Length: 148
Image 1 (cartoon, one colour):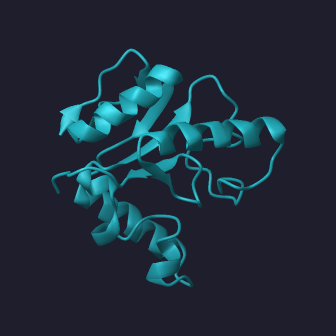
Image 2 (image 1 turned 60 degrees about the horizontal axis):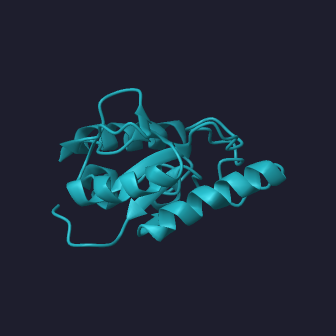
């Protein structure tokens, strides 16, 4: 893992990614400045987040909870292969970690938000990132030969 430091990527706390993922993210950021909310997340933190969500929603199965917070054993964040990002200076429609339904990538708020989310998805896809449909900000890097 390497620390994310780039003039075109804003972070609010130290963030870490696998080097290949960081290189791909920099290519996206060269086209439009990004905010990186979160990259690598420890297994302990992922487990804590999942358990907290599960406890707050006891009526949901683990698989249903996984639509909002990844099951720790399936989470790409714990490998440094996931990023939570936004286009800097663009209206993305909701705050980061908003879970009221409007966070779904395809949720229609207005044309501006639709275009901004599409732009983010297109820029990220060009570099091998796949969007998680239930969070406009979440992308997994599925390409390359990365270390676990």
